Image (cartoon, rainbow, N blue to C red; front, side, top):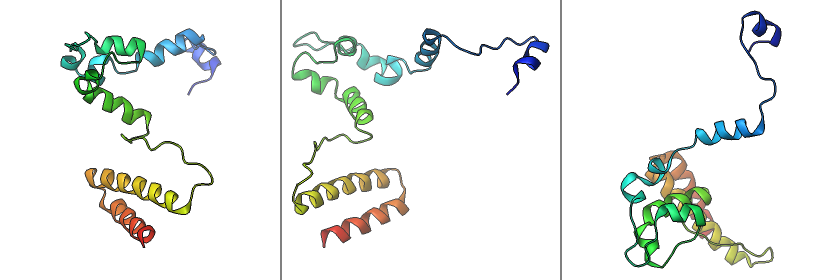
Length: 139
């Protein structure tokens, strides 16, 4: 870091406040493009049933027909996983007064998903801890 006085002496221009539009543009510019996220081949795909494309999905945030889920499965899985903090299944909200048995089933399901992810990542220490937690809850 350099102070404004030293920066001026060195001929370095420092903006103390960046306009919001410049800030957003620079942040968005660092985002991966569609080909990085979806892959160029899948990005060009078009549903034979409804003519839907990933470009249209990005604009409208809805799909055109049930076939689109299979056609764009890989791209949608990445988006869902990102939106659900790494999970690809949605278990919904649990009422605060749910029975303990229901809470345990949900906890077990979440722990098993974490265990699978840890094994895939070859993080065996975490996997062992998760396995122990699963065994403890299952008893």
